[in-house]
Length: 361
Image (cartoon, rainbow, N blue to C red; front, side):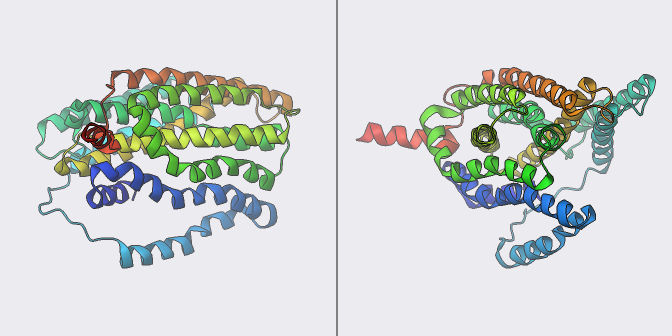
């Protein structure tokens, strides 16, 4: 659904309007992350956790109706056959890799089993890479990675999201298990991130026009890493207002990061390449989110050896160590954006248009 939605935006708006369009469209999408933790807390607190899985039914039906009534029916003039072999190789390799990362922290597999499964996973992914170079219409067109802006945005998004993506996993653990908040209070403490992202979304096009993608992504990634490191200072004696303030600013910079990376994907791809670009970008994002949660779980498990019998102080200490690992990883991921040039992204940031206007005046 994500690549189809983004592809619709790319087909509807000119490249120079993409930042504004994506920023505006993302605002309703942020209502879910804002209300989701609260709804989850209410359901767990007053009903049964199984009720959570029924929430999507009315929302899904409403989405179907709105899509049927309002979504343009964009179609490709020519469709290529589905790369079934590539689908099997890539999906199997990624699925197996995600599984190994998930269960590694649970210590349910021996070292030999983990190494064996990782070997099979990497072999499947390598087989797909070889297959993609020998088929006319591969599942994912890896040749798009030759484009500098596409390569930097997709790979940078992947590595950055591994660090950022683990935070939603660690926060409820810190709030409920470490600090003793109930599920509803924990959900309320998650709101500032979404509120910041939603309220400040419309300022982001101006920031990108003013400073450019390279400077924004490099500096913003470092800021996010520092904020994650700062979360390691939250303890029992930390005032609630300080937790809310940290979460608020983290939400703003996270939203700026996502908007920048998602838009830069389409800066230099042609109209014929947008479909494949959207598919690859969304696939990598979903992978990185899964890996982010798995990495946070793994880091927490390493620093909390006996989580079933640990007291709150030990839990907080272990979660703090996980924050340090994720924060350091996020700062390190800045290296990926170093290959960008100052003029990269002008096609989607309107910088070129503004520069010409200034010259004309």
